[in-house]
Image (cartoon, rainbow, N blue to C red):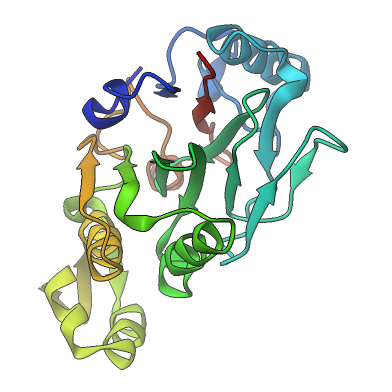
Length: 254
């Protein structure tokens, strides 16, 4: 389990970036695989989600999960009606009966808390979502529901590091066409290959939007085999699937 120093200091929030440990799944999914969309035994995934929900003192049916598609879509959950998997890559709520969840296996899980209106949120940020505006859209939605980005605490959780994020020239060119300033997020390797710094790119997005309170849990999902699932590591090992770690946040009313 990993925790944010910023969020730990907030009495109205409970959160956790769960590792892959302390679950019931076996094999390549060992052990806390919470990936509903994985090929793991669904009963084991459900048991793992029960473990998560107990940590947050709620029923597993009150874990808000996303059907993540690397989009820039954000949903604000008002109540518990039709609580299901939401077709989006970011969730916001001020409802203290819900824990918002994000699943990752190299992409960045981001947990946020707005202290003025006491709004919690989670973001799934891979390169595509970040590139196409999931972070900007989350801040915009937060503003639309009365939140203040100047009262926002952001934590970027474990994700793949630049050292292990190899990309091709076409990937690099897309980012350069967006802004020449994006060059600082790439390290050239030769042979038209580069290494991309997803974490730094995400942090800069928040900074450009005026968010000042940002911390990072600098765990490399690719390199930390005992702690974290990794899509890229699974592909390198020739595995046909991989587990997903879960990160969650809940508003607490005292």
